[in-house]
Length: 139
View 1 (cartoon, rainbow, N blue to C red):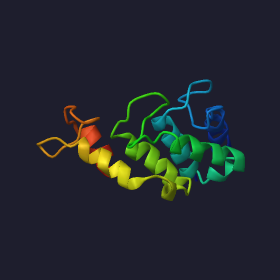
View 2 (view 1 turned 45 degrees about the vertical axis):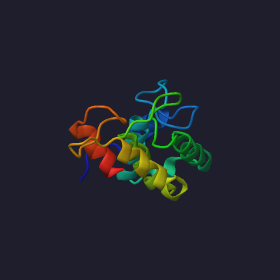
View 3 (view 1 turned 135 degrees about the horizontal axis):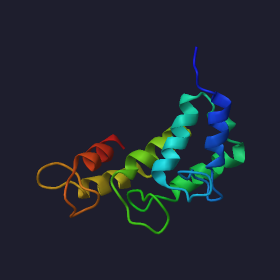
View 4 (view 1 turned 60 degrees about the horizontal axis):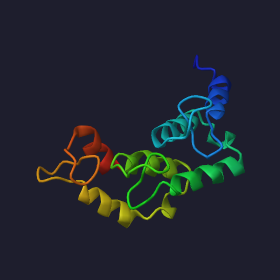
């Protein structure tokens, strides 16, 4: 038997939902791609994604889609970053809306992030690292 209080966890996660449509790291924090993924994934693992109202679900899909420039950015007015192809892409997938993203554009951005070694950096011309290589490929 699980010792996790599912309703308490759901309540806390939903408190992290922002007016922007994504999830912040804590209640009152701005929405960010990584925290949005974690909130959506946690609700999905708890079997409680349906706790998002239809309006909140639509707003979250819209927030995620607005993060796409060519690749995805983690927050409004920030640069694109290869890792957000995973964070935002996986969020859209769990929300049932991944088909709405422009995946050829994401692939082009990810390809531009690859260096001569074959690994990926955060953005074109940036040094490669394992985190961005994995997240860029996983997205």
